[in-house]
Length: 243
Image (cartoon, rainbow, N blue to C red; front, side, top):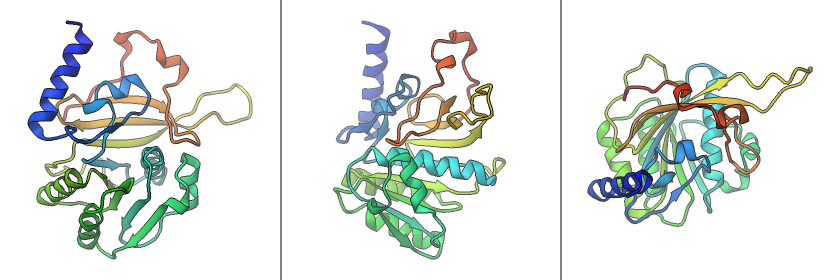
């Protein structure tokens, strides 16, 4: 049996044991280097995912657009739960997520955001539910994961302004991501190249952490590997991170 088939079989077995990705589809990034490390070869719907930037505003903006790009590729409305409405919704359109698709739930506190998320996740047929919180407990993550599994809706906890040295609690999230701004390509002329991010997969259930430099979302919500990195030798891989 080919190695790729063996890996796919192992991932399917792990997903079946853990109850993840059995009934629901996955949304691929369309970048093999990323997709091959994820259960179901993409962002699992019917599951909880965690995304963070950093206290640096540029990193938080990149994480927001990264999340918008994922949601842009899932059909249906998006419910975005936050403490207060400080999200610049028109900018999400740059990643393919039109503001008309986004319903804002201004909850006022982390506790209320989590309650709103859980309630929203009870309704199938929506693209996804986002909750902006500073931190949340392992128990809360389990409740969100169960609600997402039941409805088939993708759930995203967005930890804005998350400190790098902050130790994250255990989580039921299938994946945990951290996004940083990265230098764009030097074009050799007074101009700016396509924005780039450093995307860190800090945790993935049944897999290993990894890091990539990617080109930021285009108008359809898709990221890409820079051309110079696509065919580089395996020995030059980005550093891996310990979960």
